[in-house]
Length: 284
Image (tube, rainbow, N blue to C red; front, top):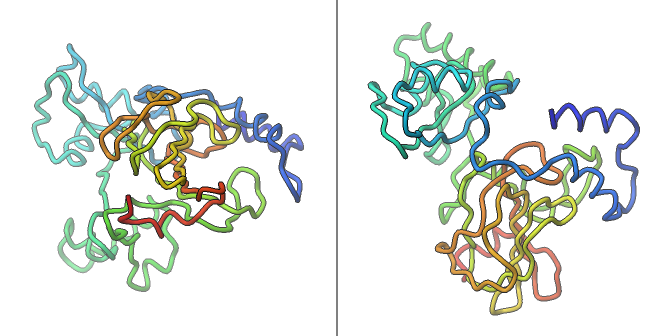
């Protein structure tokens, strides 16, 4: 419903105009996306037109994985393959990766892993691998060149940086439909993924902030700040002291101007100017 409302708004002349964009303009978009739940409703995932995945925490009384699979729009065999659990023996509190399609959700972990390497893990024989490769390309909307030449997936960043869907710098904005400077990194994660501070410091902002949606800003001892945007849930309060990698400050969401669940992460210097977060790797 949110995506449909946003599309309707853009088609009715609300598209951004060239030049500066005022805070009021961002607020008009932000009200379309209210803070989301820690765990997306199963029916919402099942209605998704593209591949979506999330984490499901098994509740008391859920004794058959097949029923969970059906509620999310997938199959029991897909849950078994994705979770590497043939029998799907469940217990309350157990975390299960769920998806809304029939198939196996494969996560690329190795640096520079290629499509051919992945295919070879699941199929033997030239013809079987060719057919499986074509299926993967179609299902994931990969470019046609992936069938003709070695195709590498995203490299794993040094210092265990996660997959990044949008980097620091100029980009064509997927919602505003204009070239804008992206002041941070977008890190795609399922709804409800815990968010911890990259560095210790004091919370100087916690709440709704224009296009960021639910936002937390932390000031550090050297005067720099870090920002954590599009959250579905905020746990930190104004004035709280938080510890690097230890204090749970919020959870990943899609609030504000967002096309899907992800964390928008920024680093700003003591004068408030955005700097490339990748240049701060390893610094405290």
